[in-house]
Structure formats: structure tokens, C-alpha cells
Amino acid sequence: MELFEVLRRRRSIRRFQEKAVPREIIEKLLEAAFLSPSSYNKRPWHFIVVDDRELLKKLSKAKLGASGLATASVAIVVTADESRSDVWIEDASIAAEHIQLAAVALGLGSFWIQIRNRMHDEEKTAEEYVRDLLNIPKNYRVLCIIGIGYPAEKKRPHGKDIFEWEKVSYNRFGEHFKD
Image 1 (cartoon, rainbow, N blue to C red):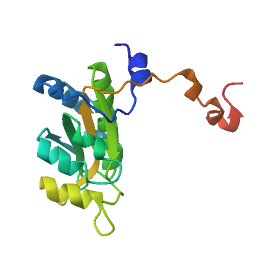
Image 2 (image 1 turned 90 degrees about the vertical axis):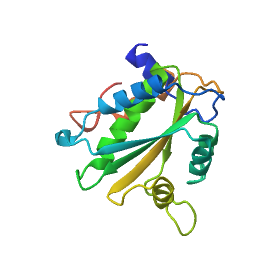
Image 3 (image 1 turned 120 degrees about the vertical axis):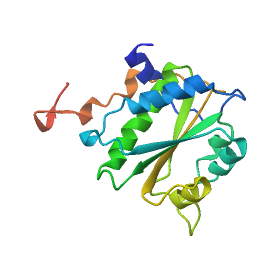
């Protein structure tokens, strides 16, 4: 699939078929993450692949809006060692987006569940909840969870109606790029 077609088709899918994602496909998703750039090539990320049904159900309770994980075939928890890079958030975010784009190219659906700076409940952060559940060391921060599977819902690709040319300046802020 051509890159721009992948970009148009990438939509958040939150309902999945009861069909396992083969390990070879999961490896391809991780290869896409490994191909992402990182500041000074520090590559601070660490990925946790979760396909255990009970763990997926527990992860679906990490925060409000994560319930789609209960039907996902697999989740990739995106973490990074904050002691390796001061821009771990950016590095891990690029890797996470590479995973989502690769998922589209491989015929899968996915959705991003923001964990960093979100709450599990009134007393515990979503990051603490996920860290405790998956035994993640303290120096690793949890950015997000990518829920992945074969879509059980169909969404139209993005159209040009989402292009916001008014948010693009040319040479100086406020000088329109396109009339």
C-alpha cells in the first residue's frame, strides 16, 4: 500500500474480530517501531507485547477510554527509559505512530490509549496501574498502549476536508501558505 493511502486509512479502531494476530505480523509491527528515528539514536524505548486475554482485560481498565483493549487481539505497551534520553516522549511517540501506520499497511486496525499524564482513578495514575500490572521498572515511563487487531468496524479513509491550510504559514507566522 502506498504511503499516502496508509495515512488516509489510519483511523482509530476500537472494536476487533476474535482473530489472533500471527507472531510474524507482530514482529513486523515491532520492526516498524525499530525503524523510527530517535534523538542521537539513543533508542530509549522498550515495548511490551501483550496477548494474554486476562491481561488485556485488566489493561482495558487502565483509564477511561481504554475499554477497546478488551476486544483487541494484542496490545503493545510503549515505554521508554527516561534516564537514557530527555526526549523519550518524542522518541517513543514516533515509534508508536510507526506501529500504527504499519498496522494499517498490514490490514490491521489500531488505536492509541494515552497513559502518560492520565488517571486510573482518583488516587492512582494510569501509568502506576500499568507499571504495577506489568512489572515495569521505575526508570521506564509508560507513554501509551496501542490496541491492535483485525477490525470489526469499518471507517472511511480521511478526505481532503480535514486539511487545515489556514494553519500553515509561509516564511512568517500569519502569512498564508495557500490561498
